[in-house]
Image 1 (cartoon, rainbow, N blue to C red):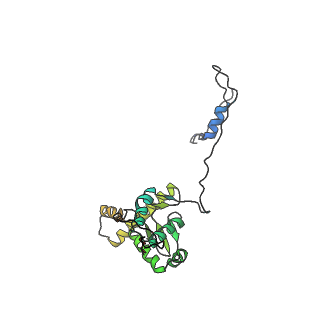
Image 2: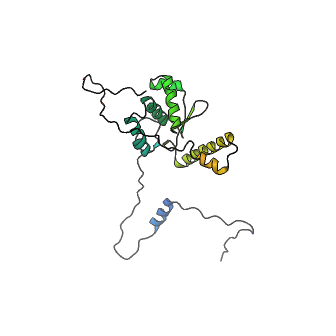
Image 3: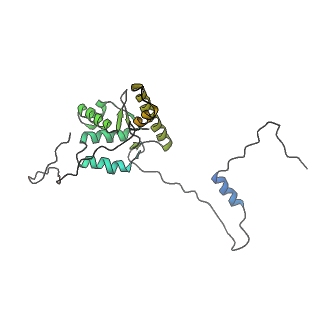
Length: 223
């Protein structure tokens, strides 16, 4: 009787091959059905894949926080807590970011949106103060990954970890006397943490865009 082949002393045993789901189905299909009961004439396995999302354009899509859209952005716009320029700059950056980053000058954004460069600069400053965006050197703009991100969850976690590490490093550089627990607490309040800005109270009267009638209340420019 032939002997099973043994490995040499000190060699690691051969690792078992990982069995995939497809292999498991194939193995199961090779087995005969039990004799008891009604005979099985045939069996098959169909692989059905989800259809990809259909979106406008060729650049794919980002994951956006529904709560941010409905509870923060929509309310700010409706109650004039956010100007048209601020809204446009934010939406532009959310749409252009890849892994939370985009590179665009103030002039390029202004040209694309058809507004003054000064309005873009002021809008970016306000949005940065709200922790929705952050400006970096070389015309790099970061979109807060907690409100919008293009990339899978693993990449988002890496991005968030790096941004939090950057915040801690900046605090240690500017405030070397701070203790570890103080740095940690302060870093949790820095970008990319997000606390919605104070929402204006509900508007007291219905607004309508001017249609030439004297009775309509014309909505004024917010920027």
